[in-house]
Amino acid sequence: MLKRFIIAAKDRAHSSASFHCKFFVSVIVMSVLSPGLGLARELDLSIPEDALLASHRIACGTQKPGHYEYGAWRGKVFGRVAWEVDRYLFDVVGVNTRRCPTVIDPERGTGYRLVSREFMLFLEPGTENILDVWQNPYTGSEVNVLPVKNDPVNFPPVLPHKRDGSPYVFPGEVIGEYVVRNVQAKFYFPNSLGGGFAKAIGGYEQGMEIYTHFVPKAELLTNSETVVQNLRLAWHRFSNWEPWMEMGDIPGYLIYSTYGWRVKTEEELPQILQDAMNSDAFSLYREPPPEDDTRPMMDQNNTYREFLAAPAR
Image (cartoon, rainbow, N blue to C red; front, side, top):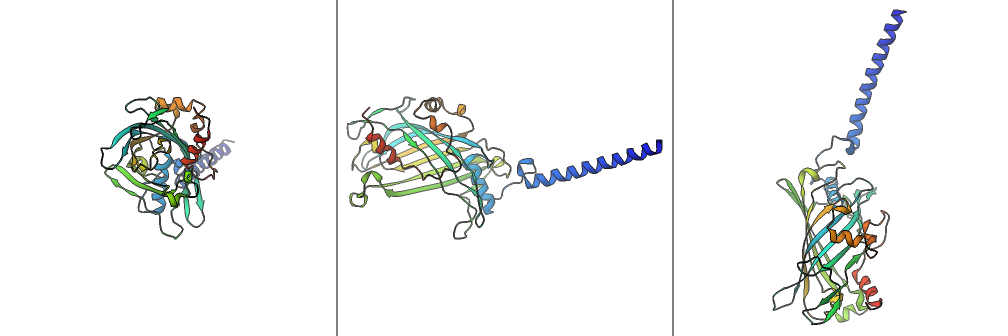
């Protein structure tokens, strides 16, 4: 009886040791295959797939499914007309609510697409006072101010390889302990407010937006799903006059000079944005569009057209 007990005890000990060994090996394998479980590696920006993943993490903080967050910005807007000093016209504050679902292409690899919506308020210079009516210093006219409301701001997929087979190249570099990314978005298209006569009357929208991101290297360059906490942004825009300024054919343009940052919750946004999102006019912007939203990017002139058609305020 005692002998059988000793043999059984040895068998249980051997079985337990075997189980723990197999469990330990399984954890290691799962950790390698699933970066969220540990053993994360550093990304190499010279590799297209790693460079694309770094951009994914800049765009939305993490590649983790279901995650969304807010990008906020503040700054000043200047008007430039030839042969006079630039004028400081307004302050601005805005927020973009975004998510970045993963996209898998059998030929071009695994990437992402940005799905978002945003709004921006025009403020009296140096204050938190939202401008509803503005005295245009160029024309002397009093005009109604239209906040920017873009729904959606969606982009096509970004993948490790382009349609022509060339690799994705990260638009930046590692400088010390930071990754710096610089992107220029250029646009030139017919102004939809001009109907079918844009080419005849010169009614084209032209501009450039410049985004420079600064992210700690240790936070960004990892294949884990940890959320990037310390992204900072410089955003500059050069573009036509806002339609509601009613500038007609006066030559000149606007210069936006702003800084931005990323937050995970609505409560971390500036109070003026929280208050706006708690109103009926901007409540839609508390969450991004759904992942499968296929609408094209919003044209601001469509919003202005609706503004003109609405009853006078």
